[in-house]
Image 1 (cartoon, helix red, strand yellow):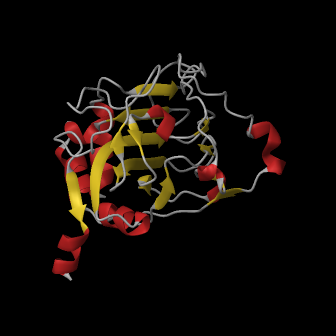
Image 2 (tube, helix red, strand yellow):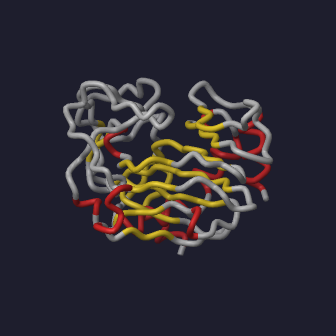
Image 3 (cartoon, helix red, strand yellow):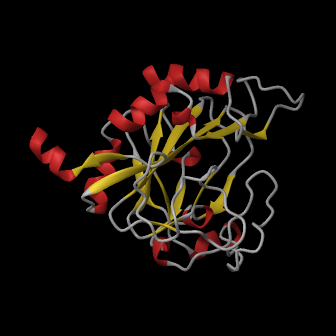
Length: 248
């Protein structure tokens, strides 16, 4: 409930990078039908999101699963699909959107509502081992400029050729997935809201990576050089394995 209230405040006061991927037919933002809202870097502006990212167990979970000695907070991404939303989250890999390299890069996807598997995030199992593909703008479907990366395969038309999995989740659960895995999400044709927070984390082997062409994240210069460790004010270390061991 703590974060549900925080989500409502964040939606009422969106940031400069907030996007509306689908609105009602009358172009309003009613919560009763057809809205897909997204915003990033909420922890920079809202204390409750910052506290959740820095103090909840999610960083420790990411650290344990990645086998990392420390975890840096990278950024957060709020995704809300109201009942009656047709807009899908298109198939994509996360990491090509970001200025970060390494294998110890992941997302914790945290639902604030009961999410049945048919409206939940779905994944192509094993695709985190695939090559990188070009990012696309969610709102327009246009390919990012000058990345030098090949276009994404048409996963949707070839669903039967892939091992696609999805999971039912409830508040208190979280999904953790590699930043290179192909994933997507359907619209929300259920009767319940689908509010979720994706928090991105980096581990020991992650390095700041200035990529070719258009880039989405970070949204401001963190003061790092290509190849630097991620440690900086914008990407703080929020968990260390040694500190966890001392607490236990």
